[in-house]
Length: 220
Image 1 (cartoon, rainbow, N blue to C red):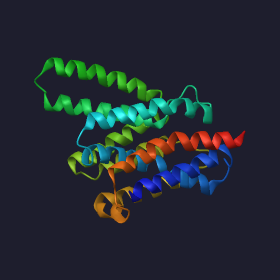
Image 2: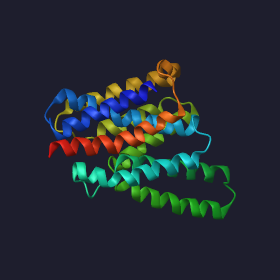
Image 3: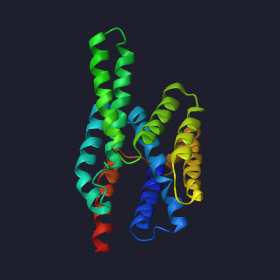
């Protein structure tokens, strides 16, 4: 729960900076921590904290679809899909890859899952963080699945090299987020400083659209 609260706080600061104080470097550095931590938690929860993976993906996708009008209202990004849709699409790709691996000898299973992966990939391409965000999710998945921590480096490089912020110092936020993620990977009990409860997952689902709508509304 601790990591989720850090990510929510970081996201909130980032969106305040985008809408009101875009040139505030400190706020933007803090804000860059949000995406990597959320991406890590989404994959971690999918693999370790949910008994029904399809339900988890479905709820995430519905939350993303319902949040899209508010996302557009807040940022005017009518050509971008929000990060919840990215996360759900990324998990769909991971889930279908797992299905292919489990049933590698079933040709129809491979065929339909490959089509599904292609569709989800094209959705990812329209999302905020797009393909780079997917690469980060896949890197975190490989860390969890193979226990090979060097995949953290791949996710880190994907973000740090691809992002083109006006100020290079903003990448410091990404570096800080990866230190937090690696700390949790080796010492997961640190997250239990604030006990995790299943109902807490709704905090992010509700907070994401509500805070965007509120910040945009008070700007009018």
